[in-house]
Length: 269
Image (cartoon, rainbow, N blue to C red; front, side, top):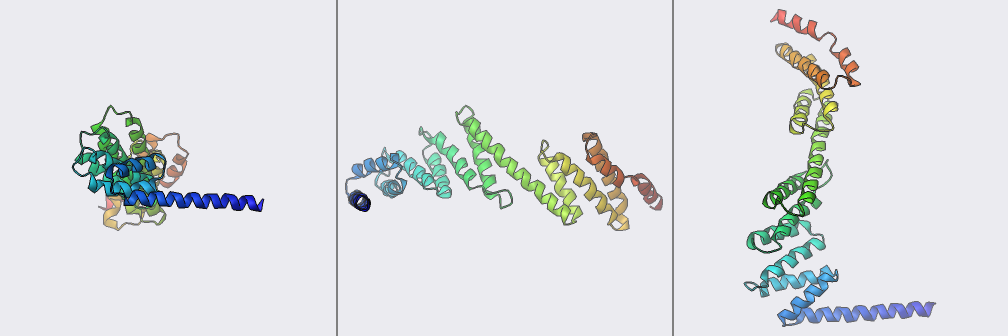
């Protein structure tokens, strides 16, 4: 058994040495077409780490030729396959602008958005790449409304917007929990206005009611009347939207004396 393992290990070592020697010959070869052929072979075999440097060199060697566009596209795809998504997005965008009539331009525009989609982090982190991905995928959808990839692009956009929606809601909740009620009211309004069909609408409107009421309670006398009126408006709107909500009883208890309070403040003004 030990001899068998040593034999297998030896064969693998020999194979690797031969493979490395062959790759070095390709890198050093002055034959441009041969390098191109081998680069394609490596790419199609999934050996992207080998293909990438060759396409990088071929970019210069084929500049201005008929193969320049194909080389650049393979170069961008190799960047993508080795998971350098930011660099790949840059090259796909540059490819699309440089070769607007190439058969791969449609795919290049899609890949710009897809690369940025893959760089989009979880909702709690900075969402710069999320916004970039949405903009790039929307551009693709506008440019190619009949594309076979349109459904995929729209699904990615929907997923990315859901992430932004959650971030917006969680930010508002954070303000609410920290008792920054003015910021919470503004943030919950943003969630409701920016995402009218949000799954968080009921919770956002409920917390907005409480935040608006607490804000009024803790306001200076000159601002209390207006803020109590605004909190009452939020309360009424919630009951109109969600008359059967479990939150109604809670809000009824909070706002039970809202009208007398408002009337008292009016009489003092």
